[in-house]
Image 1 (cartoon, rainbow, N blue to C red):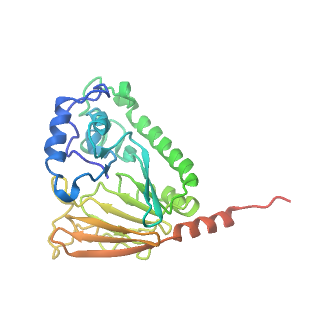
Image 2: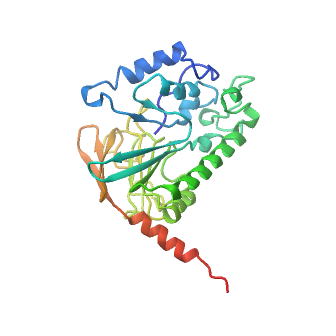
Image 3: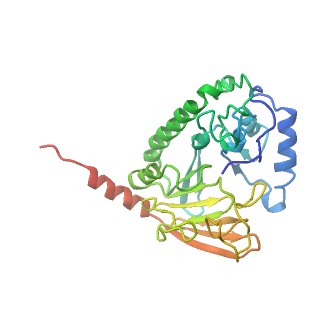
Length: 310
């Protein structure tokens, strides 16, 4: 779900030819990915990835995000062929399939150059003079950075809306970096009009399962209504630190059910069973997504928006 290399992505400027892998990218991939996620159970398992705001550079846009894309052709399991892309997965022995749409939502952290310097990809304070990633398809300057990300996100959205109606898979899942709650109305639309089943996100350093049967955030009292769409934030890898103390006796700054941890999904033709698992192996929260629920929403939405001309 992004922020693959925390804090500042691949520590090199963008612009290395896509046919090459820089020393710095090779070094970081070996130290942070290959030498860490290499247990027997992970051998040969594909890693479907998206970019997070820190992969672009965190407070700059010109770190070597393009080298994370290039690494797709240097690895047997790392898959990030573009900032937005899709993967079809067949389970022939269980008679179901999944379409996964990986999109870039980092426009949320692309702001006017002079504001929130420490959390702004387009920061004029930290981007170097002359920062330019146009040679590899990115922003051409600090001044055009915000509008570039906004246009790029609009391109992502149009692409998803064009692809979802074509899907013949049993399940449709969107994976992106920015957490549940951003662009609420658009994700509601994807669920209710296009049949999106599940939204998987990151960014915040915690575990948050947004079950549509439980619309009130028990910690921050914020509205979690995504129009019936199931969503979760799997940010419990922690980055440098968790969002708040992992002490369950002190949940003052908590947004979800846990801090460090991970999610386990069991997928079948009939359902997706989701478990939020704490760092100590404790199951913190569970939810079940039934097949056809999103399709029913889409059918109802289509019926309510159809007009008959006489």
